[in-house]
Every structure is written in C-alpha cells, then in structure tokens.
Length: 438
Image (cartoon, rainbow, N blue to C red; front, side, top):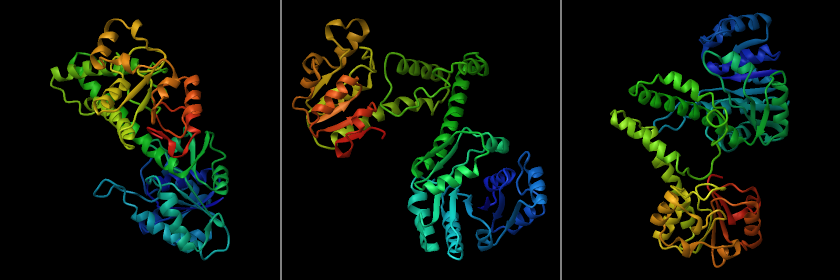
C-alpha cells in the first residue's frame, strides 16, 4: 500500500520504517527540513536500535522517503498516518495544536485529489478527539463526508524506546478504533503480516487504551519502588521479594482485580495495607502512592452515595452487605460503609443478602456489624420482593442470577444503580440504569 506519515518524530520514523519493511511504500512528511534531508540521505533522525540500518536499506530500496510537501505526499498515497506530538500544556492537558495543523493540511490536500483516502491517527489524544475534533476538521478541509471517499480510524502505538522495532513486529495486539468498516479493512490489510490479535473497538475506547497502559506502567513502577523502600528498611532484598511476588500468575500478574466495580473491603486487604503503612511510618518512610489507597477506596464509596443522592432522599433497596458474594463476612465491607452513610443521611433502607443471617454470625464478624449497624435486624429482608417493596432506588452490590431476574421482573421503571456489573441488568438500559464505572 502507499502510505504517508505526518510527523517524523520518534513514533513516525519507527512506524514508517517498520511499515516499509512490511512491504508498503512510505512517504514521511515533516516541516523540519533537516529531518527530511536525513531520511532521504538514508540516515535516521532518531537514535533507536535497528532503525539506522533499516532506514538506510529501505531508502536505498526506494520504499522509504520523506518530504515537506504535504500535497505531494497525499497525492502519492492512499492512507495517511497522523503521528505528530501532543505535548503537555500548562494545565497538564495535551496540546492539540500540531494535530489541528496537520489535519487541515491533510484535508486540503485530499480536496485536490479524486481518489478515496483513509486517515489513521497514531498520536496519543484524549477520548473524543478523533470523532469530535479530527473528523470534523478533515470534513471541513476536504469537502468530503466521512464514509464517502474519506475514512477515519484511531490506531494507538505501544512502542518502547530501545525496543521499538521488536514492539512493532510483535505487539500484544493491534488496536483499531473506528466506526468505519472500510477504515478497519484498510488497517487489517496494513497489518496482515503482523502476528498479533487484531482488536476493533470504538474510537473513544481506543483513544483511552494508550493512557491506561502508560498509567498502569507508572503504577507498577510506583508500587515496586515504594514497597522496595520499606522492604529495604526491614532488611529484605526487594528484588528477590518481587521476583517471588511475580511468580503468582493467578492473582498478582493477571487480569484479576483489573475490572472496574465497587470498592475493596474484607478482613485482609484493608488490614494488611494499614499494617504495611505502619511499617513505613515506623521507619519514617513517606509512601504518597500507597498511602493514598485507603482514601481512594473511601472516595469510591462516596461516588456510589452521590449517585443515589442525585434523585433526592428516597427509600433504597440495597442488595448485598458482605464485602463480596459467597460469604457472610461483613468486616470492613464497603457495602456496610455505604449503608451506614445512607442511614446517617436519613434514608429509609431495606437490605437483602442471601448469605447473611444474623443468628449465624459469630466472632469478629458479629462484633463488627453490631458496632457499625446496631439495628441491622430491622433492615434485613428475607426475600427480594420484600426488599423491593416501597423502594424507589435499587442498589446492586452483589446478586445471584435469581435475584437479578427478580429485580428485572419487578423494577417497574425504578432507578437501578449497579455496583457489580450485572449483564442482565445492563440490558434494561435507558435512564433507569446506571453502572458505577460504566
């Protein structure tokens, strides 16, 4: 395929070289004459293992070149990549000035040709940018409508400096965000020689994924460094501890817990987090990241309350009280915290949890709930129908299939706030259903 790549920075140069290596003909576009001249001379404008040799070979072969002429590049290509920088502005939000400029250039150049053209955004941009900013800009400048000779997609990159060629050739997945079937097929053809899952989603989700990946990488580094500082103070080699930690591929290095939902609780997570923080405090070690987790968790309970409170003070049916389904353990349950908050704010409350029976509670679990909600017996209902009676808001902490079906059958247009993510309830949709993170 004939490609043009706007922006000969790190991502643009690497992407151009790797795409040309796949057999495509690539023209790089940049306003910097020095970069353009270097590429045309067979020299890389960036330092990256494998790229100097690749650029030299591809330029000599005639499949990789560069220009400052956007119109000529568009005329000679069928697909254009937007790969310009989006640096942080004064507020922390990315500056989209380069994006705006390049989109105008591309659109105006497309207006001068008669053949179809596909634009693929490679730059990291905030969600909504492709559909709400780039798309309209291209339409205005080109005089074409999306889907009528003009296609658009988002294709975030996941290239690590120092390993960019390997990352391009063996990515975890190829991600395309687009509402255009034609753009998706163009992208599929572009990457058909890359052996990786080809994932198609909407533009907003695609735009978010690059942010999520980099933020999670920062979280992992912050976690490792803060625990490392504490472990060192205890005479432990944190490198060995983390080596063993990473051997757990069931919980630690896995998708487990990486599913948005309600706050954490129970007898282990809050207790052990506080215990570890106390170790740091004893050693006078500041842990701003780990130290914020309890407050972050509490804030999530506040979000659930705020969703309930939006409709005013109405009777609430709360499904679930234990910290998770399949247990009656209510110690430090976020659902108990939510129930306490509702009671304290004057809400009438009915509660159903199929695993919680007051007569069977013992030990620390019994002591905890008697202290937190002394009159729990008055609030507990024995059936789903009894719980729903008179309630105007239904809050789902955790339910089984039978309870979910009963809620669907008897909700009668009442507001449902889902903290669990119950697929059956999501089908209700509309103004009656809200998920806490979806």
